[in-house]
Length: 276
Image (cartoon, rainbow, N blue to C red):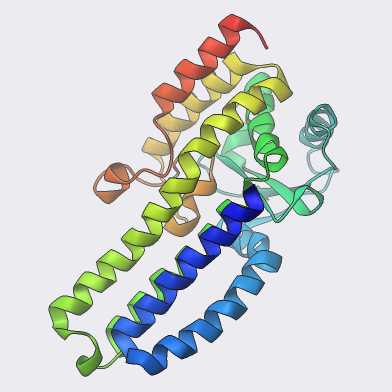
């Protein structure tokens, strides 16, 4: 089913990419954009995980650098019935985490330096369980492809606005509208795929770690920290993080790619009451 969703996502993003090119450059630009989109979709499938790791300025983490984290991931992935993912770390001080990769055999779990400093062992296990749930549910390919294609749409809109030529912009007002509406459309597509996936990953992650209460505690802690120290990351990749890493306010608040943390905590506490 996720392969169908991924194909649909690629089709939507391709249509948006071509439409933006057509707005600024006309029919000839649409054909060129279609060819580029085909290449970009191919690249997104095979290399988008590397692109996302670069967006978060993350690097591979060897076992010798953090044996406790490595062993925790290894134990939890065995409980989840998954192959061992690569482990990466971002030097960002904001506590956060995400999973990326095209399938469980080519997956990576990334945590920030802030996560290792702020979360206790149970909270960290809950967060790792959540990210492994994304891998188990095969959410990462959809989210990773969305991140790279959204970034391409935003980049194309900016290039088209500044270099598209006045005769092809529909006027200055039309160009400004496209400059705003193209990234907004990409954000709405991300919203459509992200919120349900987070609830599902919370539930499955609680089962993997056996610590729904610790995951709930971690989400509250991470949400509070993220508001105090927003992460400098491309907004196109923000939906991959376990909590929204960007500064709250404006369009970020109106079009949240993450479900409300309060509701996630409530559901996890309900899981804890029922027992996992």
